[in-house]
Amino acid sequence: MEARCQCGQLTATITGEGHGVMCHCKACQRRSGSPFGMMVYFAAEDVKLSGTSTQYTRTADSGDDLTHGFCPVCGTPFWLKTAKHPAGIGIAVGAIESNESAGPVRSVFEENRHPWVEVPDTAQRFPRGRDGR
Image (cartoon, rainbow, N blue to C red; front, side, top):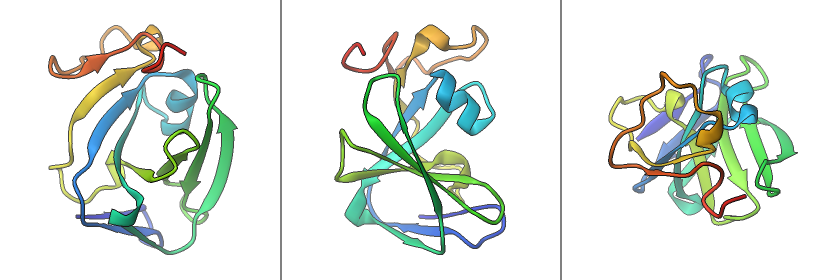
């Protein structure tokens, strides 16, 4: 599987299976410019990043540090790493070339979900984070 930013400077080659997470927190809404952020998480060793990314670290609503990587040329949000899961990396679903990426297995921070956003019936749903924070 391949992923790339808008300008093509930042890319990823992905060899493993991932799982999708929809996040409706206000920070992900701002980061993505949409009503939710959607990342597909992989084992870090299954993702090979190429190109240059700029990083921004913030404290999530859960209290955990999140580091976002985005293209410094075109600004595309691209990857996400969490202190809570250091062996993984999330890739923004919109950057994945095929439209066959993993769907959401979880929907978190639904307390901020826009009422018109539909979540698949198969996804676990949490008002806040998975651990209640």
